[in-house]
Length: 251
Image (cartoon, rainbow, N blue to C red; front, side, top):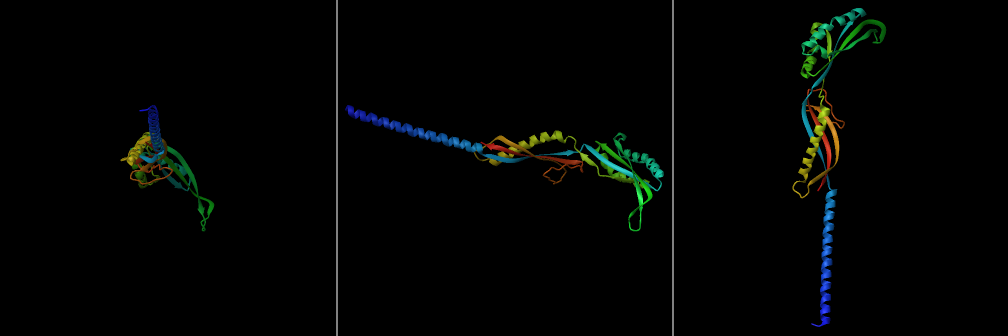
């Protein structure tokens, strides 16, 4: 083979190798760009879910208010009678299982009653005075307080004009439980997210943001919902609910 032919041959081989190298480089670069773009897309993909936690609790504190009153045309006699009936009322409260130390006197109020004329207009003539003794019971024996509220009107049988308000029931450890339940709700949110992406190649990634929803304390079996939260005080048995909204990345 002549020297001229060898030169042409070497030149052709060089051009071929150069073309092959460039082609391979373009393919590699394209693969890197596609892979990078895929990673960017996945990084920007997000999923937002709500997490939920619920606990059933029994109230550990009850507050009840009651009162009895006396009405007499004579101011002095009205006051004496309200004081005379006090031991009987206190005895009745204690008989329902309440300790004396849990009974708080809220004081005695006085109301002056005026006569009305034939048109129903109040005149300046005094016809009687009404004294009212108010009580408050604050106790951890919530069941006893419920019984007291139901039986306080039994004093009417003894000629005592007694009336009772509905007790208010509280769970005093709700604030301590709140953090624990929010953590539980966050875990619930991740499980929900994983259920939504199951079956594909994507996976739930890191937590991007978290927003606490309402923290509600409702009566047992209640469907009450409020954007501001529900804080039930009417029932002994309660359900505490925590809701969070969590955003995760998709990998």
